[in-house]
Image 1 (cartoon, rainbow, N blue to C red):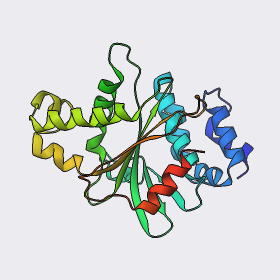
Image 2 (cartoon, rainbow, N blue to C red):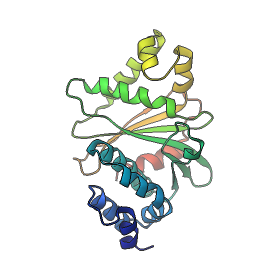
Image 3 (tube, rainbow, N blue to C red):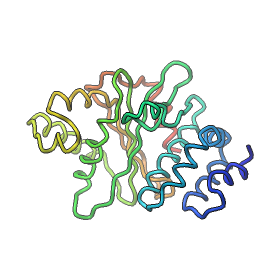
Image 4 (cartoon, one colour):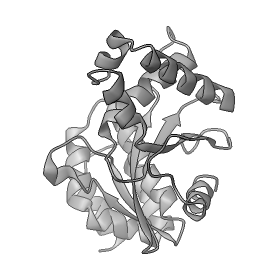
Length: 233
């Protein structure tokens, strides 16, 4: 399927804020064009049912993440592999050569001038822990706009999350879908790493990362190297 045919199928001639990004990614990367072709029905449905600007930005971040990952020849990507099971699960299964497959969830820090960046990171990360799968390595990628995230912001957010869970703060835990402290930490140990980056097109910024020392299934160093490299182009 040519790029023009792919775009015609995905957007059906309708104006959409994601048309130009998709056109650029598909034209510049054969691997992304192949990914978009393979999952064209899923992407087309998302484009048709997503109208709110905030939700379009979420979808853009998902597709942009696939584009960046596929710049690394050692990485391959499957979109929403667990969707048929109808359970909360990560957005992608990412394979490193044929040696390892890990799960990857993508989310975006929502703008809220009434909250500090650290507080927004706490809520964003806590809300996603329930989607991570057991017996797998899980990576969480967080996109931000405009604001600059520093390593200290992420470290402080993770410390706050751990402290509230250790205190068995039930209001905090149950707001994010956990029954109690043990239930939280079962999910907490599933996250291998967190990576924060700016949306593409924003001013250049190096990624900010956190490796979970309590992770049941940490990412091997060679996988981490390829992953980080894909997001610092």
